[in-house]
Image (cartoon, rainbow over all chains, first blue to last red; front, side, top):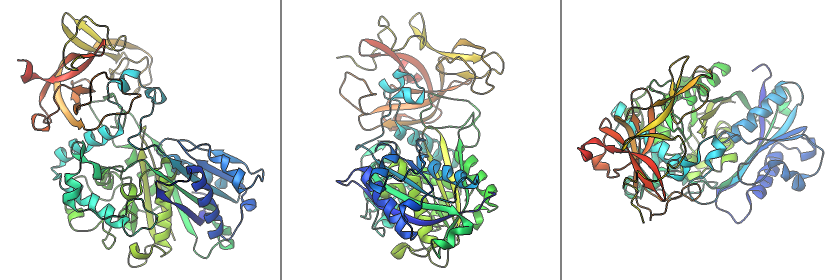
Length: 381
Length: 142
């Protein structure tokens, strides 16, 4: 990145199901981020916000104040939060502005997402006959992956148990009750081999952050987080993605691999340097596969890596220390920003009961979702 | 009430141009790129690999092998799901037809009877007053 970017204030509304609207949660998160940065809404030179199901993000100006600020709404599937942050980065890097607010919130109905096929350029019969479910994609992908790399299916339970254990340490998480591997395995089978407690649920929540040129970060905080890279990619020909009526016989690297490689290259940092990681865990299989797709291990090495405890909070490669999507749910507009929020908390040493030991200095976040997009960030102290 | 797995050759297809009917046997209707040979399903007008716009229709092979599978264990939301029979778990999978892998409902939903690599063939299934397609284990019909 030519222009160094800093994140200087963070706010979150707890994830889960709440009596307040997603938009009201967005307002709460925005106010908290401004407070955390020791600044006020009128000081924001721009704002970028995203929400898929809870209204236009820029409607929050009615609560925050009608200051005339240029406010851009971003809707970009599961990468909505990451795309909002990326847009803010470009607005600062272009020299147009020095400081602004990024906000993401959402509030989804209970149950699996059910977008109209036409929204994804797909024919109606694909939805009518019961093929258009994200849960099926994750079932297909992990089923084949376990087969190809001879990974035991019980590893899916181990990953899930970690998520809920970490969520229990997180006051902002939705699911805060630890579950045993047996309870996870015995829950309702939703998409073989994935059970109910191996999937995250659409929910509500909000995250906001104040973003500025790194040179002026000291005006806002003594603990700025540097955004070393924020890279968004869409699927290339030959990848296997959600909502695919057909696949090309010769497959290529996933969009997650493309986005993570771009982020590491842009930051000049390697996966081995990373101290704390956030990976998209729509389901436990996704966390397992994304470990390899994002370069943290070779395909098939997960069995040993996870069994060794490496991905636990006290391990060598802590993954989803806040419980990830599994424990927090997936309010799409906020989800990618939640990952950045958690890494910032860890790098600032403010993660409390779930603080990664030592002094973590480098973090990584990865979002994946429909229609085959991924956004990755690299963050440092 | 109709079974989703009962053949119904006389009814219209769930979408025009989704498959050919060769006598009683269906074949999915794909598109083949004249420039690079890429095969898509369903038919589309331009090539997602080489970006050329010279696609011609192609009856896809009727048999292939199961590349991956899962079982839909909960009722999909309506819309977009539109079925006139009570929900029961159903199998879904990708079938490797050589030139392309297609996603499809399966006539089998019991995990113990599904395995990666098993041979399958395309069949028609009743879908309300129309006809859709599915893949069936070859052993079932021989």
